[in-house]
Length: 269
Image (cartoon, rainbow, N blue to C red; front, side, top):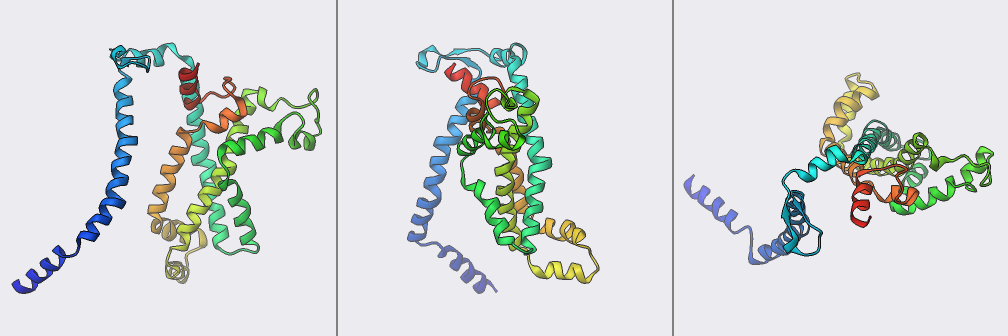
């Protein structure tokens, strides 16, 4: 027994050769180092600088401020609360509407309904476009002479519905446009996860008399826990880093303030 254990331990020690270590160093160590240098260190420095006064030019101008900057944001900057509210709307919309729709579409496409390949391609198109390009497309479509105004029967600058001039309309417009891409993105992620689920699990559930909804809720969802975690993380990140779409549609105006736009305005005036 001791000899067998020693041999097993020896084999484990010989598992990594010099070539393996070099490969790990290059493909794991280097990216990890760059990630720490370009992501974590700047992030931690940003947190540290938030407690100081600094013009961003000379390090000698850094002065300790304590919580003064946070006090200014929370008490003397009403735009911050408007931006935080809109980002919260974005997160809730994605979480309660866009993401569930993406999951539903993925489930329907995975069932191989008639024309599922066509649907999959149609929903995939927005995903390959950047949010800036999507913003340009929808700005033309929703503009005074755009396709949407023509379909509504209000073509022309004088008769057009001021879609970008009403805050309440702006909220639904921006969230709907963002969802156009997000739904397809979630559909692709979830569709990939559904294809990895063992079909025998569904078959066993069907034999036990489970309905499609019961099978999906009690069998498929638990089996796709890693994908669900990724989708939750992506949904939160997409909601908090929203900037380019709002910038393309509204510029630097306060038509629909978000945190990213507030940071941009404070940096560039």
